[in-house]
Length: 117
Length: 112
Image (cartoon, rainbow over all chains, first blue to last red; front, side):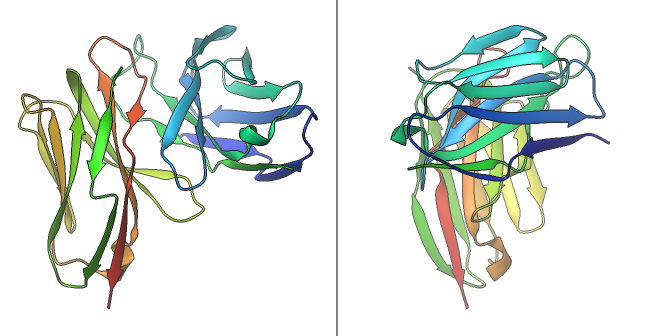
């Protein structure tokens, strides 16, 4: 079965510091990968998605970047955090459209709670 | 720009009662998803609705999709306290791969 991991689970960082959040998926190949952010008490906003190694699409202009160095690894980064970067970051995966049913749901990881002070 | 609106945003209901959460979206879509989120937790997939008229049921929850009206409903039957959570619908606009746009969420509180 497939599993998705995120770490760290919780992070408190000062404004201006760098950020690296990691997401890995097990049990599937060539998944589509996604980063979402959920601000406190709000819905989810898609930040980045990737259909393959090195292929990243950004959905909103922001202080963050994403990379996919390996098939099942997705990293969210920032060089200098802002207060507004605080939130709950969720990684998700879905079946690659070429190899499976593209209409399956997205499966979410446990999330990383980031507080920027 | 795609808009996905849910109502109500907050719902307090007594155990044993029935209620419906509505999800309206502003563009054509052939896929709609419902998720559940417990406080401080990640999202759990509830239903995937793939065609007009689709209806799915799991326990006390039933979801339906009307693509012509651009409307999905999540019906709760005889609510129990364990259903207390926030419920999100999410839409994939036609022709946009698998990028989900989420609704605002409905926070459901079931009281004894």
